[in-house]
Length: 267
Length: 251
Image (cartoon, rainbow over all chains, first blue to last red; front, side):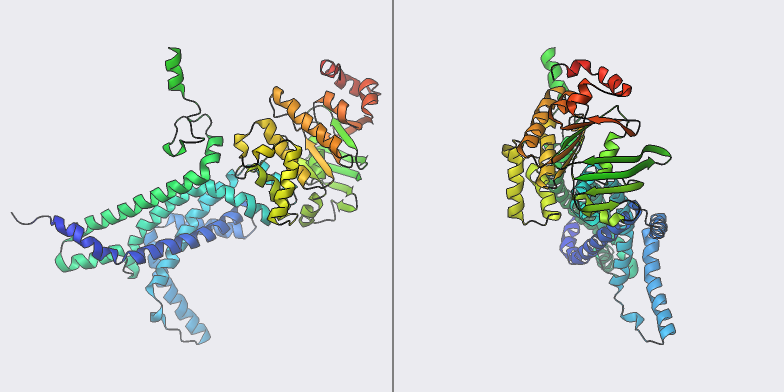
């Protein structure tokens, strides 16, 4: 029987693929940070219904959510050179279009995409902050900016953390699309590897394992973060808790409403 | 001294009060009583500019706020003349008791951390919570939370303390605890001007130096507690008070 699956190769591929891990992480972290900052800005514009800006934001978010990421990557890939050509034509300058690193197209597309999705999450989180606390902060004499920075944003962050974490995981896996702009991320590296030995199945399995492990690590980090940040607010909003999350157990995490044990006692 | 002139507040087309005039001396403890929906809380919130009045002039000591002329940006400066204690406590849930009181001292009063902590601790001692400094609001009873709210207001040392139905959200057995704290605060500092909106008439009768009966967006009657509670001049006042006969007995 021919050698249908080369099991050993699945694992020996991994170190070779990991050489491209820094590129994957670079796109992920850069896009997430820009996506958070820009997303917060867009969310604040939306919440405060700033005339003009709010409408532009709405169109932007609608466009990003309404088009595939792959299409956005291609648009970014072709739009920037056209834009530069136009600038060259207008100002009689001579910027070298070919000198732009392909990473720029990828980072731009991912950052804008992330900002649009994050802005909706952050907006919902900002709106969920207790109005009473905002009033209390105002009544102390804080300026609007101080209220935002000291009270609203920290509280909203706790609420938004799970969805932002989800976005982060989604982003990390979506970076596998970067190859369309000729950036060699992990997936592109895999395709190159398989191109040499035609062992495509094995290389994709190796990639799946790496992405999965990365996701599991991220989930664990998020869990620790959430555990630290949301303990008190969870206790407040989930009383009585239907289910006690394991990370809530401990000092204050005793099941508040343990119906089962109570019913045993009375029977 | 607080001077309110021609103050008007509307919510859309619904007039809460119109052309309201009221003057309050420094160190006075003013109790505002009246039926629900009369506009008592709205008046208090207008003094703190949490509600933007539609018209009028508010003077607190030397600061004047002209509703028509002054920009909204000036509001945060004017707010520093008063401190508010809320019905729902409105403590910062992500901050400890100590941090709740320190917040305004650091961001608004620009004290450094040590000074702020010292002052916050002092006022938390005044409301008997010095052993709860590092607790979070959810770990406290409603009464304790409201006492933190009072300490947070006092620590700003604004000179005017506005209490907006401070015990309405509390279970009956916790009301006395908070009222005792308020009483202690008033007795401790004779210069502190206090305006309290409350349905705890017996308490108002006990601590207020002057009482205002507020109904249908206007001041119906004002006077000393003794005069207003025992010898009301207006029929509406008498009718309102008659509903509270039981709770007022012995006060």
